[in-house]
Picture (spheres, rainbow, N blue to C red):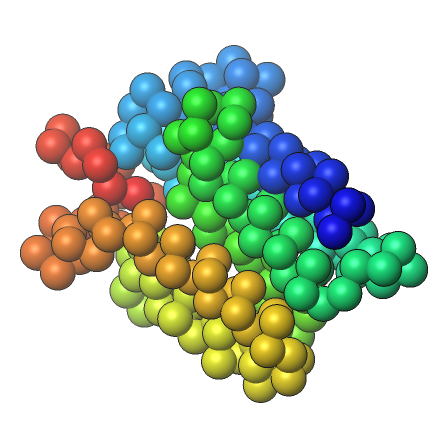
Length: 209
């Protein structure tokens, strides 16, 4: 237990790195919190019209989830960290993104980081969930709908591929938070007011995306 606490803190701090803000500042672009939905994530960065910035944000947010889970899964067992501890670390890096200490607790919605976590748990798991996301996104052209559908599928796919209750519980915890973070988007989807992928935000679209 003594070891797991610093590992959880490290995971949370890594997850807190706001790549949307870092990338846009490095590229001399507007802070993503100042336009669109105000969400520091790849989807909102894409609304700036800069696809490279959006891609780099997506890559960075996914990479931090993957690297933390991969590193903890690779070296953790040798340090006495069991699967339950690994699951807690996975949740910690995800929560770091959603509640970033560097953004005063106001982070992204967690889709890319969750995807990175799933890839770290199992490439097959991450790949299948990404396929669900991609299929839904292509059909609906709604990023938020794709995120919710992929999230709902994740716990069952986790249990099927890993057979681990600990990993399934951890993924379920992330899914609950992810769906909660998309509650406004879900309302907008049901009312037909959600913006589609690549569409610039409408003037009154202040809380979606």
